[in-house]
Length: 259
Image 1 (cartoon, helix red, strand yellow):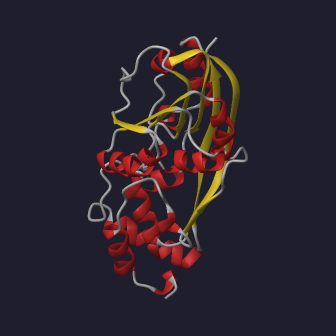
Image 2 (cartoon, rainbow, N blue to C red; image 1 turned 90 degrees about the horizontal axis):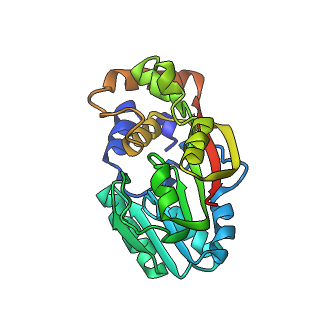
């Protein structure tokens, strides 16, 4: 049955029961779309893997992005480690990355990182919770690089503000790429590439909204279907009347080298 023909209660119940472990968004196929950044992070990461001797992937999620890059590159560097702070994701990443030769360390991401100085020549991250630049610089070898795709400012805030109301300007400007570049430079790194894009995102039914907010938990902190049922019902009616709910994700590409 077409999602639009199903009832509000049915769509919401299905999305509320779906597993949100890992960082795979295939549940949203046909229900939500997001434009991809022009630089192709996973492909660009794969191009960098063969030259690396020791790799650290921060906030790896379920390990899907790193595993996909490894498949494109023909494998991981001789030494490879990843960190992840959410236990269900750490378990999933372990299952996926251990067979590829990477160790997964359960770690919240808060300083200090559980690695020695100058341990890695490539540190990577796709959508890290927060880049702790001093620690990144510490674990990089001289000449090593940090290569990452960050979430940019006010990402998907059309949806956030639908539920939470207008956000302060300081919140809207959080994760600004210029500010993060300044943080990298203050830690002694040289920013060699910095790009940012805003990308159209569409939610085509209310189940997609529920699943997304359950999975990306920092968007609407404390989100539950029961707490927001009235607003969800209003948004369901809006989508049925006007078509997909449109928001815009923000993404930044950052590459910084340690002199």
